[in-house]
Amino acid sequence: MLVDILITVAAIGALGLATSVRIVKQYERGLVLRFGRVSSPPREPGLTMIMPGVDRMTKVNMQIVTLPVPAQDGITRDNVTVRVDAVVYFKVIDPVQAIVGVENYRFAMLQVAQTSLRSIIGKSDLDDLLSNRERLNEGLELMIDSPALAWGIHIDRVEIKDVALPEAMKRAMSRQAEAERERRGRVIAADGELQASEKLALAAEQMAHTPAALQLRLLETVVEVAAEKNSTLVLPFPVELLRFLDKTTRDGVARPEDTQQEQNGRERGAAHLAPAEEVVPGHTHR
Image (cartoon, rainbow, N blue to C red):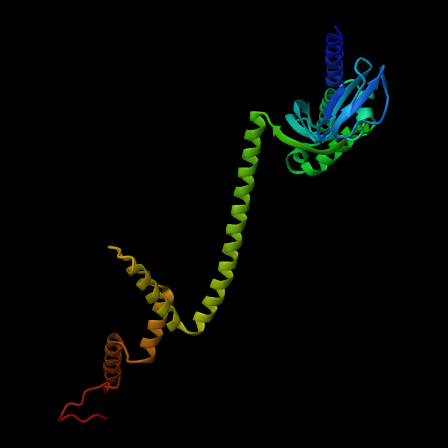
C-alpha cells in the first residue's frame, strides 16, 4: 500500500515538474503572468520554471519580422490613380509593451502601415513615386515609427516595392519617352551637322588656296568607292576642277581656235592696208 502511495506521489511530482518546466529559445523572451499580472522581467533564453496553474508564460519573438503590406489604391497629388504595395521590417524591443500595450501587435502594425502608405500616396506626385523612393521610404518609416514606439516595437526598414499604373498612363508615358528620345536624337544629329559644317568650311578654305588638293580628294573618293567592287561608278566632276583646268590651259599653250582667229585677223589687217586706186600702165595721174 505504501509503495502505491509513493508511486502516485512520484507520478504527480513528475507531472508537475513536466508542466512547470519551460524552454525559451535564443531568439525569444518569456513573459510570465502570475494571476494575470506581470510578475517579473521577461525570462532569458534557456530552461526556466513556472508555477503550474498559477503562472502563464507567453513567448515573444525578438527576431526581425517581415510584414508585407497589401497593395493600396490611391490618387496622387497630380491626380493619377496608382496601386502601391510595400514591406515593413520591424522587431520587438520591449516584450512587456508588445504584449500588454496592444492586443495583437502584428495586426496593429499592418493597419498602421496600410494607413501610412495611403497617406504617402496622396501627398506625393507620380514622379516622386517612380524616381524618388528613398525620400518616400524615409517619410513612410517616420509615420509608422511614431505609434510603434509606444508598443515597444522598433521599425528597422520600410520599402515601397512596386507602383502599378493604369494601362492608359503607361501608354502615355511610353509616348512621352519616345518623343523625348526622338528630340534628343535630332539635337545630336543637328549638333553633328554643325560640327561637320565647320570642319568642311575649314577644309574648303584650305583647298581654295591649293586647287590640286581637291583633285587628290576626288581620286581618294574614287578609290574608296571602287574598293567595294561596285558595278556602277558615279564620278562627280566639280566646277572648281573645270576652273582649275581652264586656268592652266590659258597659262600654257594657246588653243587651236585662238590660233585660227589670230590668222584671220592678220588677213583682215592686210586687206585694209591695200591702196585705194589701182595704177594702170600708160596713164598718168595728176
